[in-house]
Each structure stands twice: as structure tokens, then as C-alpha cells.
Image 1 (cartoon, rainbow, N blue to C red):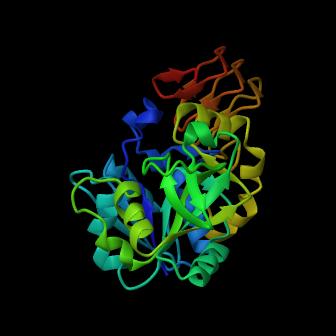
Image 2: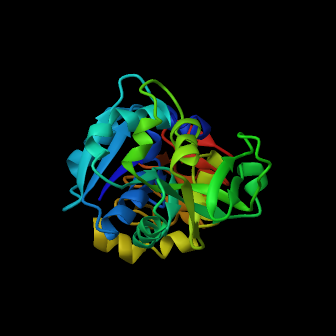
Length: 309
């Protein structure tokens, strides 16, 4: 089975971090967010991942030039003009139209059992299956409307009045039927492809009960690194085994003065923490220099940038 990874977005909710790096390369516990999705694909035995790119594409290309994902083939689909979640998928129709494929976002962290999701989809006989996640925040995030085990609405955009405690995880198994409903121009997959499947072949759902975190905002990025990181760190051994890139708090390439004080913080690659510096509850992104004696608290710090979300 092939996979399509959505990674072309501008990451506007993560600005100013994404002014200088693409959202898929924004690190969560020193692993690019994209790697959490690629790890799931490789663990499930997916053989090829088509990844659409647009914002800072050269940065993503350089990353794949440096890293080998073994028997998971990486195919990059660059969009000179951004096409959205629907148009970006439509552009790759010829690479994906031979059978069912997996769709996954590059800005989520989860331990979704991809094999179980695929088996559930095959047994349903429907045109697609969305992985859903139950949360008390569904009303504010955007609830999925469900009836009799099928998805019928999103945020009541179709006027069904159906609500649920579930949100869409950004992970799905889809059949080639979806391409009949997608548009080649800029478009969203929900109001084209998913709606088309609802109206013609049915759209099923699979409930995920494990780890799931969206890191698409500065607040979520900050929490994932510092406050909600224990379950992410539990993925270390599995990710190290599958892709060699894994979550960890302090990079081995960081230079930290022996008299600097670190408290509940994440320190990225090639960072320097000067003598007497104090870093508390902060994320220090790669190649950042914290001067001697500096005090940083409750912040995200990158070269020439300090954010307090």
C-alpha cells in the first residue's frame, strides 16, 4: 500500500517559526514533526510515501538527502502553486489510483495502529475510512457528524445537525473512488473528496483511543515539547528502531556549560548554552546560542527569535 502525506501548508498558525522553516521540519522533542507520521508508515509496512511540498521545499529536500528511510520509498510532489489538501492529492492521482492508500497529515503525533485501520476499512467495503479521536474539545475544534457507523458531516457544514465527541485525526484510508470528486485547482479535501464519498460510496470511521496530538499552533507545539511530552517520549525505542530519528529532550550535539542550569526544557541540535545561563520550561531550537548569564523562562527560542506563547 502507498501513502500520501500532506506537508505543503504554510504553517501560518506556527508563525514566526515557519517564516524560516517548513511546518513538517518544526521539531517536536528534537524530531521533525513529519518523522512521527513517517515512522507510523514504516512500522505498518507501507512501501512508498508521496509527500506534497510547497513552503520552503529545498529544506525538505535537503532533509531527505541526509536521511535514508530504507524500504520506505520517498517521493516528493512539489507544488509550484499551492493546491490545498484536495488539489494536492488530485495532482498525484496517477501515483495512487491503483488501489486503497493511506492519507496522513504531517503535523500530528499519534500511535494510531495503521494496520488495524486498514483492516477495518477493508471489512467495511466503503469508499473511505477516517480515523477519529474522542475529545471534550470536539465542539470547539470541529466535531464529525456520525450516524450508524458512517461519517455524514463535518462541523455541520452539510446541515445534518449531527454532532459527536469525535474529531478527524488527519489519518484515513481511501479508495481510488475519491479522485472522481477531487478538483485539480486549489481545494480542500473535506468539501470535495470526503463529501463525494459520503454521497456515493459511503465514508466509514475508525475510533482511535491512544496518543493523538496536533502540533499546528504555537501553543500546541509548546505543550507537546514540554507539558504533554511523556507519551511522545514513550515512542523513542520504536522510532529509533524504524527510522533512526526519535524524540529526546537534550540533543547530543548541544554544547551546554557545566554551570548552566536547565529546568524542564528541550535543547536542540548544535545549540550553545553559555556559562551561568538559566533556561526554565523553554524550547531551545537548533543552532540557538544562549549567551552566558542569560535567563530564559517559559519561551520558545530560535536564532534571533524569542517567543512566549
